[in-house]
Length: 166
Picture 1 (spheres, rainbow, N blue to C red):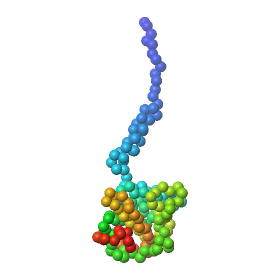
Picture 2 (cartoon, helix red, strand yellow):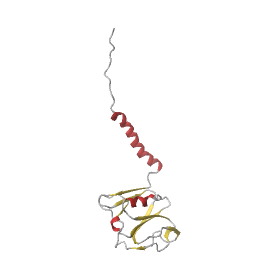
Picture 3 (tube, rainbow, N blue to C red):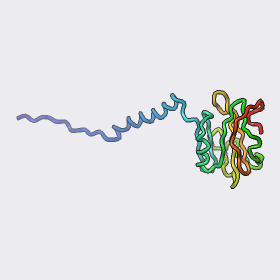
């Protein structure tokens, strides 16, 4: 009988098998948002306690809930052109020097388009962020204040004034 020559058996490691699958998943994670518009906003809390906010499309109401989850008692409203928040007054607002909710210019290491400091909102106060929205759902401006006591919900009303004038 003749001996059958066998080559040594090679075994593929899990890494070699799973690496291409992981690369495809990572590529899909990048490509899908680019094809379908990506997230409406991004929020992150830095180690210094400040919160970075970047809004890609001014339409997602979940931003307010996410800010509250990060410890910022903030109401968020998107105000389209030709509208403003009513009824007036919605609350008794503190001056921006008294309670500067937004930090401008953003400190070193902060990459959000808007940076807010939740520490300026004290017990019994509410931060209010109103974003002026252009026709293409981009943020054109921000109005940020801290209010004493309750704040009425934003009811969009017609105006010929600037949308964020209070």
